[in-house]
Length: 93
Image: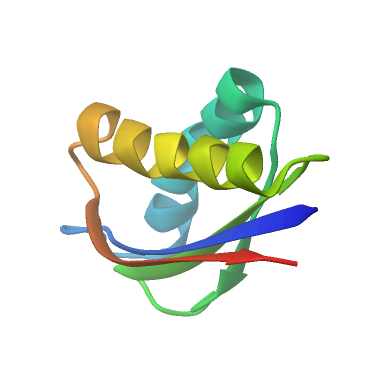
């Protein structure tokens, strides 16, 4: 099973793409380290205050992949207060 989590995040106060990258990179690195998942910015690359990131996990169990990605969503909301979660989507393939 391949689980894909898509997060639309709002980053208030960003005034440049350079600032956006400097605020987003620590989140991407931490998600990879904390959850052992693949993570990357997927869309809205040229928008200063919004981004869409995708997280992927591979598992042999559909429910385990779903739980792992739901844990990522909860963790982002609890531990990254300078970004607002606008939307989330989990897809299991």
